[in-house]
Amino acid sequence: MELIYLDHAATTPVLPEVVEAMLPYWTGAYGNPSSTHQAGREARMALSAARDRISAFVGCAPSELVFTGSGTESDNMALFGAAEAYRERGRHIITTQIEHHAVLHACERLEQLGYEVTYVPVDRFGQVSPNDVEEAIRPDTILISVMYGNNEVGTLQPIEAIGRLARERGICFHVDAVQALAHVPINLRELPVDLMSFSAHKLNGPKGVGALYIAKNIRVTPLLYGGAQERKRRPATENTAGIAGFAKAVEIFDRNRYEVQQKMEKLRQEMVTGLERRLAPGQFVVNGHPTEKLPHILNVSFPGISTETMLMNLDLAGVMASSGSACTSGSLEISHVLKAMKLPDEVTQSAIRFSFGPGNDSGQMAAAATAVETIISRLRTKG
Ligand SMILES: Cc1ncc(COP(=O)(O)O)c(C=O)c1O
Image (cartoon, rainbow, N blue to C red; front, side, top):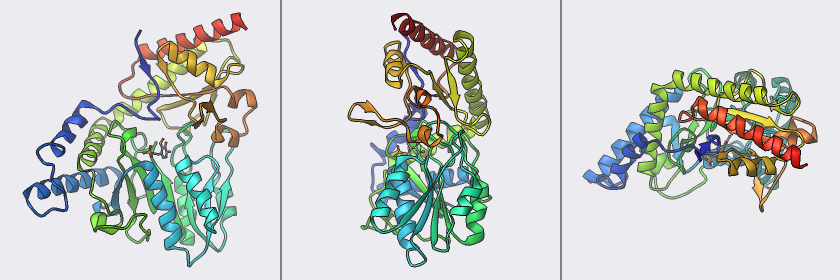
């Protein structure tokens, strides 16, 4: 049985070229980048080349990019760091109901610490309205955090419009671009954004490596205290191999950006068409925005068949997908994103996220759609 991996929004395989780029920093060039001897200098050069590469990819100055240990850390650093740095101006933060838990749970903690947080709603496609954000702004608002593209349904947010509102009022604006990095061209020179989070493992890089863009005029209080690494913004001995791998992954995406995007769109469409051909009308519904979307994520509900049942049966058929939402103590929670979209229960309780990567092909889309068809007809006859 061929295994079909359709969970690239969760994580992606590390490309062989990326592994190759990382190897020297575990073996020959294993020096600490802070050491002044030759081995240290070699590691430092790798860090600086990686910073140049990734900052060029997102259009910022190398000095504006801080390497972290994950997308989660980048989000936490942005939220706690800006909240503390701008505390004297106010205690109000705006975010949305559909953020990743790395932002939502950080906001809940900030509430416990005395900040007030407004969670702006979304429409039925999972999109935030800049008007709602504008209405939520108060004289004491110090930070707005809105994700670029949603990790469960793929909906893109009106980042530019919200950024302009924030800029006009001098409010710090953070964007979680963890899912968007590989799939949407990002030019920080033009975007009205002050802080942006990234993670390497969503684009065929290693796990446990992230970055946070901090615009040069923006203050962020560090989460960690220690040495002078990352200009004291994130002290700790740098993960040289991981960072070199992140840069290689970015280089590969940069080289193939157009082809990858076209391929993701094609695969997504083939999956939808494959389901349309095999299933009766009403047997599935696509969740998320029809046009404003990340190309690699397809969220589909199969009303009447629970998410757990479908996932388990898909797994038995060799198709690896996801619910997109958190799994707590072995049982699936209904997704906060689908809840915020106010979709009917039969839709929220039966949602599956398929997410694609450059390694997938058309044959796999057909095979996955056939697996869904077989599962549905088997469950219907049983049921
Ligand atoms: C939108 C978004 N933000 C943050 C994260 C967290 O990134 P990491 O897994 O690197 O901690 C994820 C990971 O799924 C994500 O999809």
